[in-house]
Length: 167
Image 1 (cartoon, rainbow, N blue to C red):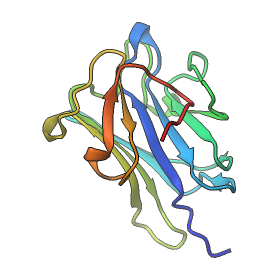
Image 2: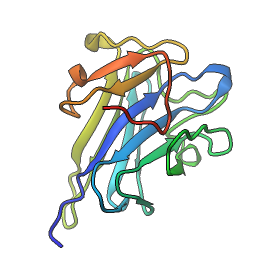
Image 3: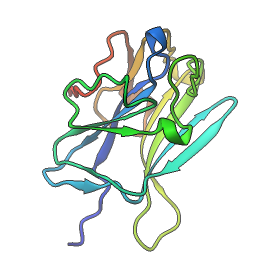
Image 4: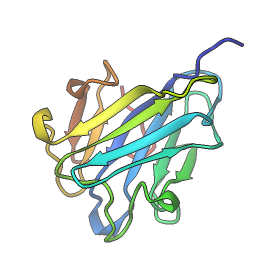
């Protein structure tokens, strides 16, 4: 009792998958206990769109990885223990419908504490613009450790690893 739930970490984001695969976001639970997803939200922003989904339920097991995807049926899960569908909400795309802009954008993981209305930003993955992180086909932005809200803690990599967290 009394613990805050701000223990989830955004660790990898697939913006422009090859062969029409789904966009996806990888989130790691950095604690030994399971964490309810109630009160957590994912926000995707680009030059042309902004969309936020407040998660209404679900649980991410302790020390495990969840993949939040645009398509459960075509999502590679690697070592992820769970897969969640965000495509149904129009946050992540699949096939020819890319909802994340590979030129520039952000994905934010936020948490709203019980009794409060303003969410706290826990992790931000940002690419393009001033970040120097330029995305291409089938590249991902990966958290390298450090501050989860600083663009200097992220890198662009050419080998997506959904479900596998390395740090």
